[in-house]
Image 1 (cartoon, rainbow, N blue to C red):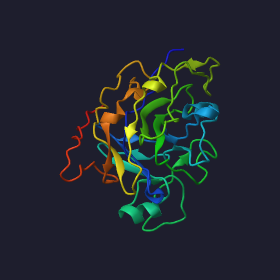
Image 2 (cartoon, helix red, strand yellow):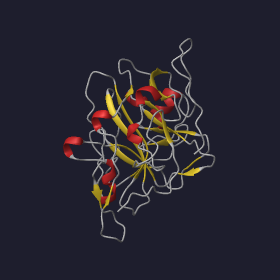
Image 3 (cartoon, rainbow, N blue to C red):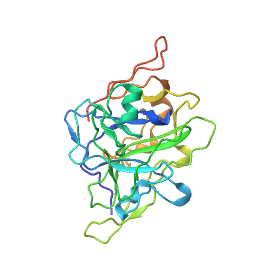
Image 4 (cartoon, helix red, strand yellow):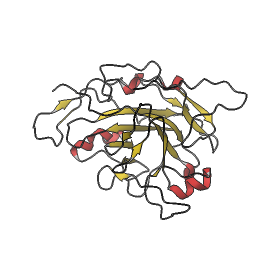
Amino acid sequence: ATWQSPPAAKLLLTEIVARPTGAEYIEIYNPNSGDVDLSNYYLANCTFQSGNTYYYQLVEGGGGGGGFDDFNSRFPDGAIIQTSEYQTVALQGDSLFFEAYGVMPTYELFEDGHATPSDAPDMREAVPGSINNQGALTNGDEDVVLYYWNGFSDLVGDVDYLIYDEGDMGINEQVDKTGVSIDGPDPGTDSTMYLPDTPIANQVPAPIDNTADGFSSHRIDFTEGSQTTSGGNGVTGADETSENLDSTWTDNSVPTPNGEWQPAQGIDDGVAAVPTTY
């Protein structure tokens, strides 16, 4: 069958903090002119190439996560991200996040048992056990995938795709869905094939500095650079795996949870492009 982009709004991954562990978070942004219901949006860090485990296997009841710091999560039912809003997912719970930043996250990956000063909504497991009260980002190299699934189609839709690498080790978390054919839980029995992704050898990681605590990697180009805009598996038809992340992201940033990137004082390492409306 032919890939059809699902009726989902485009969102962006905009910031990650990978160390220290207690302060880890992932941030998303809504560039659309209207609010977006996140009920069918998923956030994953669960690629295990040697085990043939990938987020898109969710439609078959798999998809990984639940151990070794990997997770495959779903946003809370009814969660809304407003237009031009930044939201954060605290990977080690809202209490440690608040201790680190003095503000509350929008969500916590799992319930940490604390409710001070308040209790952030918990992310849902994509499938039973896919969070398992754990989850973290590797300091050196990792993947983060924001994707959409309506609960019955054969294929998921990529919303945004991030791989990062500190430069000294090879990445083994990239995903290439080219040629993958899956039959999901829809009434039909025919499989549907994904369109080509960018070959793994050609995927470009974002920078990250894992030599010190307290820094983040930030998106500085909200147009997604030279990303291929058609013929891909993204919710807008783009190839989300083709973004030149080494140019559209920067590292050594001061964390700005739930807010815009702020260049370091006296350093001009790019100007965050104001996102176009999708």
